[in-house]
Image 1 (cartoon, helix red, strand yellow):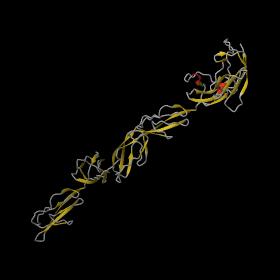
Image 2 (cartoon, one colour):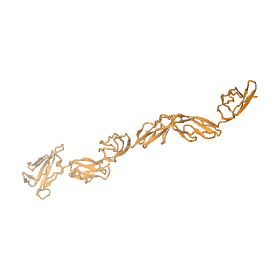
Image 3 (spheres, one colour):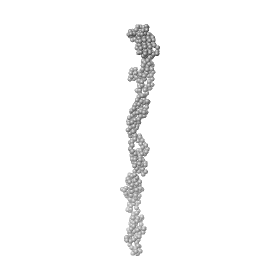
Image 4 (cartoon, helix red, strand yellow):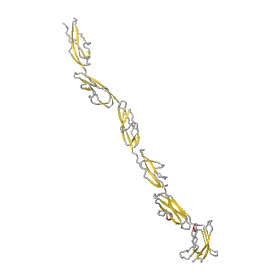
Length: 447
């Protein structure tokens, strides 16, 4: 009779599971095919039938067999390992079929943010009850420390150059290029995105304050006559620098009509410019024509104004200065000094002094009638007053000196010792006090 042997019931396992086959009765020694050792675990790769044999002491052999069904694991692919930047979003999506369960609270196909390195495991279970898994490594790169630079201030229209640091490439807003100067026309915050060699980005910003330019005012245009002083006063800033050697608030005499530019600087060192002009009018230049006195009250002065702006006002000293209502020319003048002030339409004036020489001709009347009728009552020698060193002597027919005067001339009234002289011819000698020969002649006294 063959010994009784039992290999065990058929079994179902998953691929890569371990199983041990143990025949009964347990006290016997069994021989399994396929290289199996009784009671020792192994991992079958496919479905197979395993046979166990036992031979007793009589040489009788008994066998039994069982089948192990191996179910394959479900296919699963968690995806490639991921390299991301800290705080980036990652979406893990497994494939292969089934319901996927991730560790670390991850949901399949749902984005999440990563702040450190992670090992992510996904598992799937088939209807056979077999499970499989895959692993995805997430490597996180630190963000670069991007620095946009220190806040700064410039004047409107000033040049600014922004240089980011801490990364490899930089992208600025507001159309700015890293390291390229630009003009700041208003106060703005500029943001830079810096990327490192891993493509990780960080941001920083810098504030550029654009100070407004001062409203510099050079002042109104000025009009002066040549030789007059001008003082330029600018406003709207703190300090002023003029061209043409001018100092703000300091009087100067402009030589000609010019434009003056001023640069004004405020407390922020911002500058602006303005300009004004100073128109310099020429003085009314005069040319005089003088007719000297010859016979008394026949001198004349005529004036031609050859520069300045017409019409002109004339102010001669013959009636005092200040009226500006005199004629341009003077006539019927005696010898002397005459001064005129001419003022043009620009209110510029100049002064001219002319000398009318006193008459050099003497007009010696031949007679006088000192009868108090108002006609020829005195003997008046016209022109003699122009000779301060003159001497006049009058003699009667007997050679007696009856009238004499020296220096300042006055007329003779036909008297001697306070009484009228008789009708007669009288002899005179006039010495002028010059190199000229004395004038001699007779004067007749009639009644």
